[in-house]
Image (cartoon, rainbow, N blue to C red; front, side):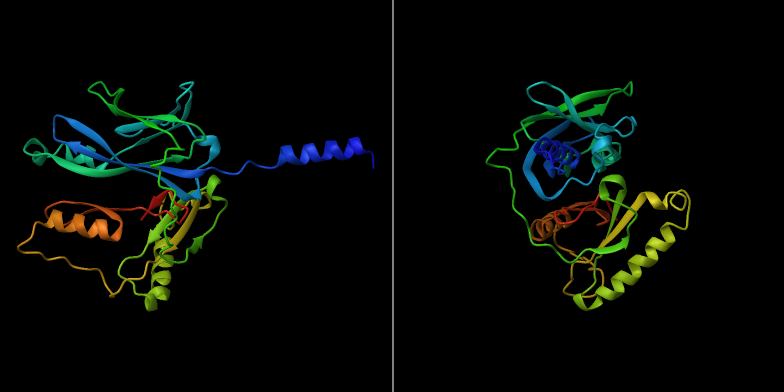
Length: 274
């Protein structure tokens, strides 16, 4: 075969090969304030071990949804690389009577494709006219020595409950088990599959089932059943935050202990966790 043709074929093959997806970058921060003011402070920067699960073709959010919006811009050119609108627990809490009487701090995270060069992360919030205005700006250098690139031990094997396509082309849901011992893993899988069956039995999920992947993860609990916390003499929020730090999870709780558990799932592909 002609050497020139061999070279041409090699070039075509190389050009056709898809680029490897970047890893997932996460900004953990504290969102503090009350009904009239907000403060933001960096907690840590994390390079998660798995590739970014989102669709490369939908890096920019054009839905105009959410009370907040964050943007990732190239530091050198200011080019918009990624954006997402979102709603947060803080955004709900600041409208409550409690927010008029006290300050509180909530832990939040922003996740986006790991950049190859320094970027500026801009956090925006809707104003009285419903337009987004900047409330916080953070320079992020992926090569910074303080970025945590560690790969924590996986809490368990991932269970494929519904696979409709590649994560970059589908919405990935993760069902996280709580209160199942290692011996009850089969029970969790049975319960999770039942949940998937129920979820996709209703509209609009029924009609869009082919757009979803669903995974299950069951970290083994030492005891069976959901733990009931009853601290009569202790400050419940202090206790929960101490437990959260030890277990490497983030808990946002009210005085009735009902709240949101946001778990940093660094070893699984996910967009929404249930």
